[in-house]
Structures are given as structure tokens and as C-alpha cells.
Image (tube, rainbow, N blue to C red; front, side, top):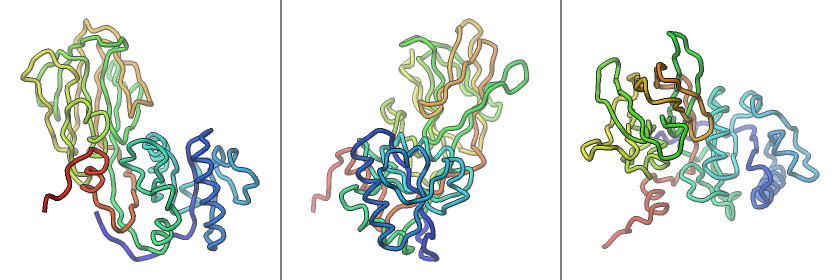
Length: 296
């Protein structure tokens, strides 16, 4: 994580959870107070429909990266994930205001958002790059579907609580065959999301690593494994599984047929995530997971 004080952000884009009253209140506060401070503000077009008498220009989510240099996402981690999957294409910096539950990706407190955000705009912040994963479904030697994820890619059955069988390869090297409910392939960012619930390791965000977490495996010796993030994973379902699915961040779903192969590797674009200068990853973990504080 690199500390930066080289320039102030020039133009802000605001976006947030649709049809959520607390989010709408925070967005209105941000727009009014930032404009009063002389900050150039634009608003994502779907978000703008929630705001009454907005005086700021509006743009589509796809265009925000060309129009602003910092996006402020108001909502939960899910809103951040959805926006970031699009915004990472342009390299725009992103910071989050927590109007959700845990908020591992959304740092700013909505009750003190202006006090926390203004120093960031003046150049008092820390910046980090988070990598994404790309999942490809290959059928008859051709790529037939593709998705990307900031948190995790999950191979699972299209039925609830249904065991499947598949083989795992790392750069064509055979790792093992598994009988389980599926496999969670997680980035360090996603290590505190679905992977954590499945017993996966917590990984510091700057690690160049991917975790493979079996979901309810049939053998007690089947355990999570961490591999280099620059490798390519090959998942090969057994022919008699029936239809499977790949999920990307629980959002994008792709069908996997019995003879298909799934390739998972780094996505070429990264997410530039901004934090206040006093941000501490371990403080976030203590607060969100209820870890113990200092004894002395």
C-alpha cells in the first residue's frame, strides 16, 4: 500500500445503492457539501434519479472513468463490487462510504463522511491496487463465456446442496480430484467474503496469491490451498456431473456443461482502491470480525 500526496483529485463521481433511503440521504449530503466546498461533482445517471433537484451533470457508469478521477461509492460491499467491476476498466480511483453491513471495502463513515473525504481530496490518502480474476468457459476448444470477479469465482452445481466431482490443475499440472459441493477460487480481496465463510485463509490485500477453498468436501483431508496469482487454474468437471455453474462475485453466472473446461486467471485491469491516510487493514479486521484488542 503506497502513501500518496502528489496531487488532489479534481473531479468526483457519486454513485450508490438504488432505492435506499439512507444512501440517498448520504448522496444528497455529499453533493451539497462538496459543491459548497468548490468541488467539481458529477453523478451516475441511475443514482441521479434518486436525488431531488440535483444540479450536477450526469453520466452513465461506463462513462464515469473518462469524466472523473475519483468515484465515491455509497452502499455496501456489493455495491462497491458491482461498480468496481466496470470502473476498473478505466483506472479511475474508487473509495467507498459504508451504508451496508460489514463494509470491508467501504471505509468512510456516513456520519462523518465530509470530514473524512476532504483530506483525501487534498491528497492525504493511501492507494492500493487490487487484482481481479477472469473466468472462461471453454467448450469444444472455443471460449463460449467469460466473466470477472473482484472477490471470488465459484464452481458449483445448478442444484442446491448437490455434490459434484472435478479435477483441479495449476498451469496444466494436476493438483487433485475433488468430490464436494464446489470450489471457491478467491482473491486476497475476497478472502474476507465467501471464502472466509467456507474456512478459507485471510490474505493481506497486497499478496499476489489465490486461494482454492473446497466447499463441504467429501474427505477430511481436502483443505484450502494458496497458489501464485500469476498461474492459470484449469477446472475439469467429471462427465457425469450434469449441468454446473460458475459464479463471479455471486453476480455473473455462466453454465458449465459436462465436457467443458473452466480457466481462471488474473484479469489484466486492476482496481485502484483509495483509503483515508489512517487506514489500517488489521484495524478493519479487528472491528469487523470482533478480534481482541491490546492487552497492555
